[in-house]
Length: 287
Image (tube, rainbow, N blue to C red; front, side, top):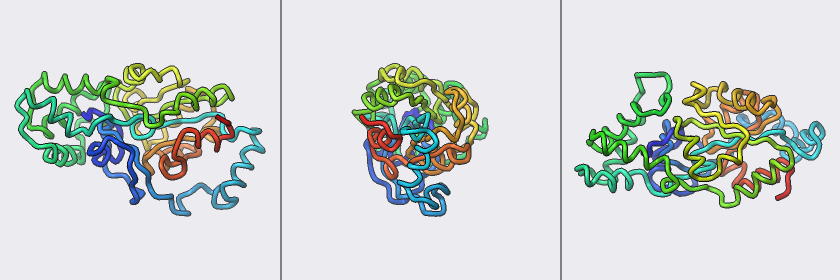
């Protein structure tokens, strides 16, 4: 609907459905991750990087962690879903328009995208969380405002579409091979995502749910990134301390600052790391 769930740079992801570069280094708005995204953001300024990196430099910091854990720098890897692990296969506005034609939707794709942005930027007054349970009330509002169509059948068709493998694809084609190597090396894997309860069936539809030892979904945890609670929950599910985990995500505020507030290490997807193979190499696992 991008009936997608998460705070992130929604507008750009929705408009393209592909990995792109963003030099601003800051995300816009609360990304309904059904308009997913995966573009690079600028390297974090020195003052926002971890103290370890400032004091020792990247290589020295990694050597320091290996002195604690051996060849593996982290016991667990946490991964963001939409925008990092997953991407929408087609631009959101295109799907809203295409499916909506038979329901009388007249707005152009540009109009739909602009209205989506306006709706998504508005405070969601019914709850402190956008994604509560299946997220239907929130997404019904978004779809109706974006398209001018409040037909229930139209909404349900869109809502169902974004739970299928037609709507999404894996950002990194080597992800499965890398995650298998990480698990073989003893690294625990988890997903941490601002999403509604459709995330689990979506991961099953993409045949990647079995890659992970735990999934922390904001709609279930009742905390959305950058709230550190969701990262702490993921670590608890994996049985590791926050300082033993590294989180990888594409949103500086939600993923990097949120993870660090929880005590985890954090790498910005598209800036600090550009592929899961690179993630594995930094952890100390050869693929």
